[in-house]
Image 1 (tube, each protein chain N blue to C red):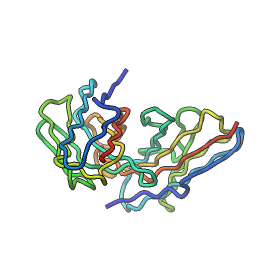
Image 2 (tube, helix red, strand yellow; image 1 turned 120 degrees about the horizontal axis):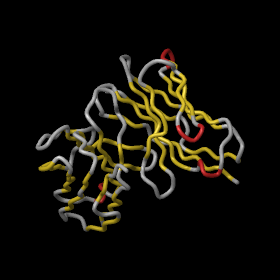
Image 3 (tube, rainbow over the protein chains, first blue to last red; image 1 turned 180 degrees about the vertical axis):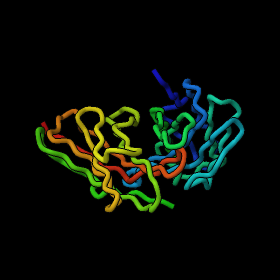
Image 4 (cartoon, chains in turn blue, orange; image 1 turned 135 degrees about the vertical axis):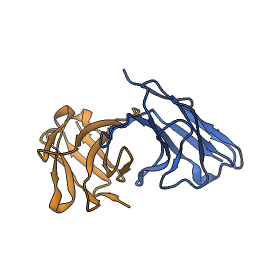
Length: 114
Length: 112
């Protein structure tokens, strides 16, 4: 069974702290994504990666960075957390292929910034 | 850039009622279309997808969706809902590769 695992389900951090969200997939997928999910706004793409050490900005990259040192692992970094980054963060992966488009999601990391 | 609109934020209905959720997108070229579902406490999962061919696609759990190109729409339907269909439903569009743009979601509550 395919699996995308996010390291933390719930986190509480203080404003200004550095936050790491880790994601690991076991499907040998090339593509990995970070979304944030907010009520009424759906899912918004923060960053994605098509290959190791490669990254591209999504629709809302400000305040975030990412790291992909290994194929199976994609990390989201908040250099200095702010209260408006309180959200549910979803990691997803997919295989290469134009138009396949099926994303496999992790269970999410709910971050609260105080 | 493409955008996706879901008309209803919340839908409440009784078991056995029919369900239709609207989805419209803004992009003039070739698109791939998806509906994802998130059951309470679970991760998002694919409900159905359309790439080409028959515009009426069938997915899991009795759901279907119809692609109407002239209306830029991809509405989701189920003839008779069950309490277990209570979930949040997301429409999504891809115009290249695997980068998906999602709508705002529709929360569906089915009363037993």
